[in-house]
Picture (cartoon, rainbow, N blue to C red):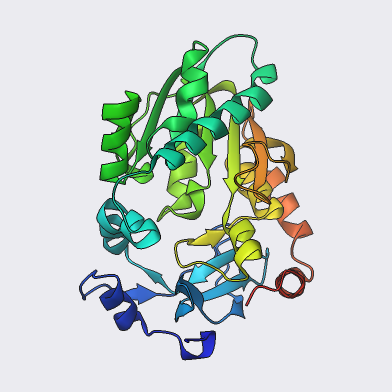
Length: 310
C-alpha cells in the first residue's frame, strides 16, 4: 500500500494515466492575490485508492487560498479533461443512468432554492455542465440556457439523450454575448479549470445587470469525506476564497452556506451566491483581502487536522 511519503513522481503519474510524456509542471503564484509566498499543507494528493502523487497542496501565506502546486501546463489539462478524466475517475467514458438522474435531481433542488430570486424566467449559463442535466428544471420552467464542458463523451451524451443546449468547450474558450445571462452557475467546475481568473472574467462580462452567480466548492467536501485531497482539484474553494473571488470580479456576496442547495448527494459542499455590482469596486476586494491575512496558513492546517485529511 502506497502512502503520501512514497508518492508517485510526476513522470510516473503521467505514465499511470496513459498521458504520455513531455508535459512540464512548475509552481504558480496564488490565483486570488498573486502572492508567490505559500506554505505546504500536504505533500501529496491521492490519484487512485491508496495511490498518491507528488503534487503538493499549499496555502497562500497572504490570503489562505488552498491550491495544488506545482501545476502542469494548459495542454496537459486540455488533453486530460477531453479524453481521460472520466475514465480515470469512473472507469468509463459514458455517464451512468444514476449520474444523469443525480444531475437532474441536483438541478431541481437548485431551481427550488434560487427561483425566489427571479420574478420571471431568465437566461442561464452552466459552466462545466457535463451532460447538462442540471439545466433540466430551469428549461422546463421557461428558462433559456447554455452550457459548456471539455468532456467530449459526456457532452455528446447530453446532446443526444437529453437534447441539452450544450457544447464541447473549455470554459476559458467560451465566447458569450455580453450582459446577457441572468444566472451563472459554476457547480464545482471552478476547482478544475486551468485559469479561474479568465473564467471569472468571461462570466462577469456575460452577466446581465443584477445577475446572480452561484459558485460551489466541492474539493474540500470530498477531502473531508475521504480523508484525502484528490488529484483532480487544482484548487480547493472555501467560504473565504469564494467570497474573495466574487469580490475580485465585482460580484457582491449575498451569502455563503454549507446547506445542501443541490440536494443530499454532495454533502458538505460550500455554496456562494453573489449579485453583479452596478459599478466596479476594486477597493472592496483589497479591503476583504486584508481580513484573511492574519494566521491564514495556521487556520488551514488546523482545519486539515480537525477534518483528519492526510
